[in-house]
Length: 409
Image (cartoon, rainbow, N blue to C red; front, side, top):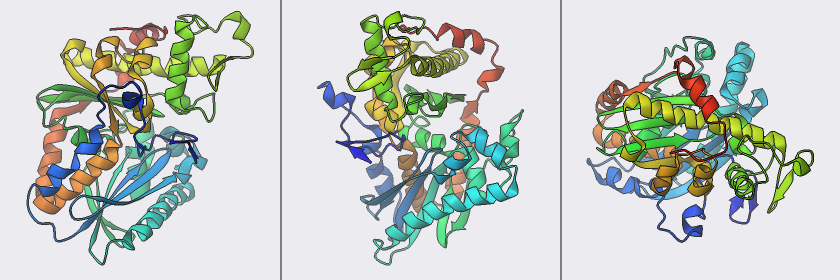
């Protein structure tokens, strides 16, 4: 449901119309995903007039885009992931999937959405063949393929099925992107591809903010990835139907005007009733939820930079993936300590990098073949290592240190 140029509730699908902090602030604005496709479509040869359907299966949203043989967008399809009835996060769904009937129902729910999207796309393919490439979180991939996801929900969080899969889904030739860990899935692999982190010498910090906050830091020489539970705070949290990016801006404004202190406590006058910033009513519980989520993200960033031996000044850019990144104002994120203040000017929106990376992979597959892609994923898994933040000795201390609503560098 739209409100002006924006959805009434941001689901993080990343298929936004482009009205964002960059244009609002009259500064040069770049959306990474807008410029990724042309080179990969034309690089490598013919692909037999095949149309490409890219699907991003997220915890909250399932987004699909259809592209023609020249890489031009022909159609798009978006739906709420019906698995939400089994829980808003992947851990809840893993637990519910212990019942085989639930697991099969979740599988059929997603297949139903994909079927609806593909049916719409096939009407526009002009009798050309169609290739579906799926980028999904690890849990969503397990559920889609009918694999038992229980190993993903308990230590040591083993991932038995890491490799890409060539299969048939709903009668359509399909390719499922590989996974790096239990909580760093094919959607982040697609993000790495779209951002070119595995191809560039410059250091990039890739951040996908949502119910699960995934981060990747590195370049073609090596990458570290991690995930941290952010809860629903970036999707409205305790303030249901309020955009997560707007909550960040509202909280930054409250800090500037001293209506909330650095500990996250609202002024006594507003503690019970909350305080309104524009059309957003900010309550104490929403402040706390966002505070906890941003502390986890900032601590994750610190852990990655420390483990990589990288200073903030060495990071060339931060890419904010998804719909949240379209509207998050870097200055406001820096003001409350969500992102490093020193990187405010180097922050760009990624758009739906999951969909874009899936599309790029599709043309790679058509132009270069499955064996070339297999070698690419082997190289990527060898240079991108995932760390478990819960097992990092300094993570808890960093997390507690980042709860304060104040800038850090």
